[in-house]
Image (cartoon, rainbow, N blue to C red; front, side, top):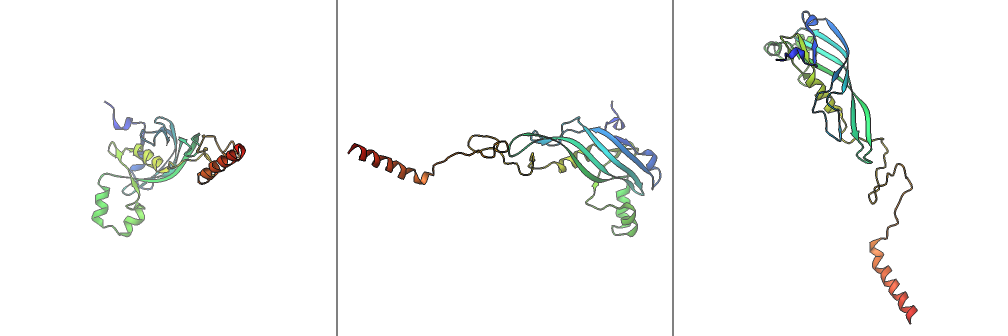
Length: 203
C-alpha cells in the first residue's frame, strides 16, 4: 500500500518545520497532475512541470513562494493551428500546521501578531501538509495554478486573421484572399436586366 509521502508531489519539509524562520529552496521538475485543461488548451498529465522557489517556515505553517512553468498544448481559436508554449505563473501558497487555523481563530482575526507573522489572508491558497507535517503535498497547488493560468481563447499570435469563413483558407498565409460576392439585394435587378437585354436581341 502506497504511503502519502511516496507521492511524486510530496516535498519534504520536516527539517524547516521544526523551527520558524527556516527556509528550503527548490528547483525541481514534477509530473503534471491530470485534469489540467482539455484537448483545446491544457497540460498533458505526466509532462514535466518545473517548480522553482522557496518553502519558508513561520509560526503556524509553511509558506511557498515561487514560480511554476509547464509545457501547455493549445489550438488557436481563430486559425486552428497547434500552439506549443511554456506557461508560467508566480504563486504563493500556505501549508498550515495541524490546528494552526483553530489557534489563529482563538486569538482573533485582526491581531497584529497574526497579520505580521502569518502574512496570509482568507484569499491566499491553502494546501495540506501530510505525514504529520513532514511533507507538503503540491499536487492540488500545481493543478489549481495551471488551470487558472491557461488562456480561455488561445491565439497563435495577437493579430491572427483566422480562416476564410467561406472556404477555410488561412488568411495569415494568404492576406489578399477574397471572394467576389454579389449583393443579393441587386440579384433581382440583374436578372431583370438580363431578360430585357435578351428581349432586345430577339426583337
